[in-house]
Length: 604
Image (tube, rainbow, N blue to C red; front, side, top):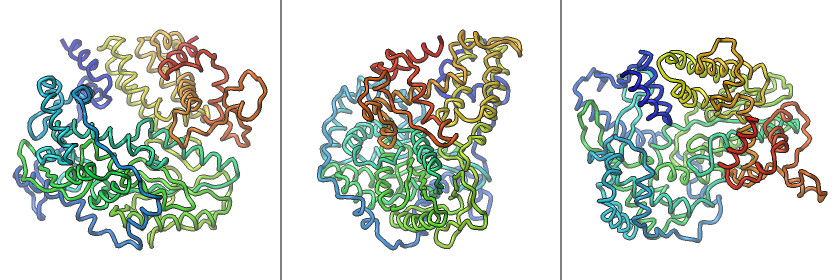
């Protein structure tokens, strides 16, 4: 019975790492206490246990935290409109929210995850899928009427909020974050509007924005930073990077500023009225221990848990890069990184201080609060610098802390770009995964153990492997050893058994071949111009440089690299590997077809 129970559950959650880990803890009797809420909270300096009073206090806190933070933001030197006008002319085109169809609504509902969490009307996405055929017609009328009149019904703007503990003292409301569950019908409406807005606005989004965009990812963002930094080192220059942290950026967003920015980007007429209605009269209540709080109005902040919220946020910060003069920036939603390059260390620091002064004023003008204490900077260079000659980086009168490594969008980057910190991080994570698999290897069949490998072990190897996979072998070897141990555990083999045939039997790629898979995929996207705009032109094709009828005339040109760092980077290694691939593989019509052929090539 236990065997069948866990088999069924693991199969169900094979695409959900969090649920898989939860099930594993249950299986190995190490279930963590998931009761993230305490029964006692501090209200007005005293302990309170009444769940209704606690729910009301939560609701008041979540409703006011954005407003309170916004009030503390100092006045800017320039207004947000002055900054916005510098970003270029307004969009002369205006959006048209064209009508939907029953087919589109059906596809939107079908694409939703089968969640059982209930909204304020006690409806879940799972239930909506069960009854969709019976309500397509009224939904068709409701959604088209909303887009035609520019009105969003108030009943679709009520959020049920669940508090989730973040860290530190559980008795303090400030140590919780809100998880909002919006009416499931509103999510259908938002998905349909989102499609129209994102198609209309996509070409006007900043190229340096990688968050919440199709065919953009965190790895693309880190890759841009890595490539630019590596090229700077190749040119015997320094890179100075500042990683900016915003306090509750999604909570302090100002509705009046957002609406003016939407109008500037071409959201006018009925489309403008629709968003004005969408942002007005939003309310929320908190559910705590099966008790519901009073209802509060929400006056600022991106609607939490919404489909449109992330898109609205990246439109809100879209003009940020245009206020910078001597630096590059990388945006991933509210994660902002700016970096300067120069041969002269004093010029570098002066430029960064000037950019931070401007950027700090831009944040103030747009009602966003910069968290100085969590903002860090790092100097990346291979050149020797006298420690006494290094100036300081400041925002206003506050000095910014200098660090030697930083976790940037999940990747640990250090000042030498040698990936030691990141590979140590992966080693620790895969050790935990290996322990979990070892704990259940005598309970689960091989097929489920293999599934566990792909759920909780390989994701740590996959993430950012393109970037760090060509680092020193002394950093890579422990990871390969850990992977081999995992394979032996799945196969029930001896600790010193050869693993080559085991990898093939399980259809799992060893780490070195997994790296080649990532390099091949990157090259396929680069050659076919399917990467984000900032990465699409990193290679020139040989026939663009010369007209000789060589065997590789249609392949990317490989540049001479001065430094070992550049020579060992994926930018240099990937095209070399591309040259080794058969033409039939390189000319695959789709990425899926390419990956299938590449795996076959790697397993030869």
